[in-house]
Length: 207
Image 1 (cartoon, rainbow, N blue to C red):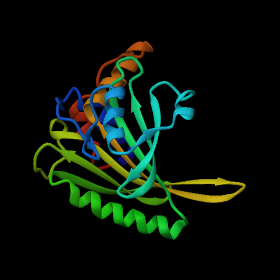
Image 2 (image 1 turned 90 degrees about the vertical axis):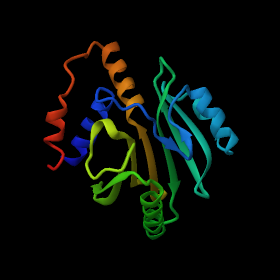
Image 3 (image 1 turned 180 degrees about the horizontal axis):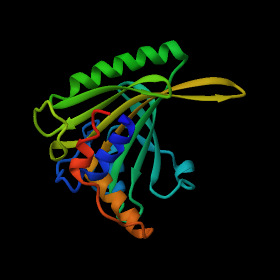
Image 4 (image 1 turned 120 degrees about the vertical axis):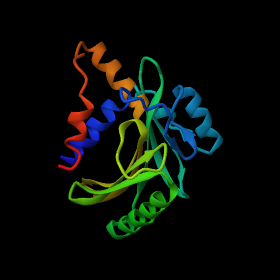
């Protein structure tokens, strides 16, 4: 239910009035993908041209460093407006133990980075994960119109012939732009309908 709440929380954030935007590595998750790419390149993060030539609409891949670790970056944007709404850094762990240690390091870093944040420990794929809701002001309650977005920290696993590989993921989602992207996509597909009422969402947050 916590995962369902998180998804619903994002979907209605725009209607609740969220205006400020979340940042990833001090880069605001707003504006067009080309402008965001220019900011990334000034930080030594460059596009994977081969992958991007055949990438799905609304996704670009980059290579660089996140907090000093070699990382792959995925930047998500609306294919029509080109507005960025999400960025994810993925770090490949050398083994499970090293990945768990890196998770603990990044968890402490994220909890200390945001002065105005509400943190929730959760479980994803049977492993500990962290969701940081970044608020516009200091508050002890998860209030829609005071939330800029979320940062999700979690471990993913890939199994193949060469063995098991562990990855640490740090995913930044700007609620306002994600809500606009979702609404535009639903309208384009003819799936428009009544918005979720805020009282229905708040009523599920502790389940």
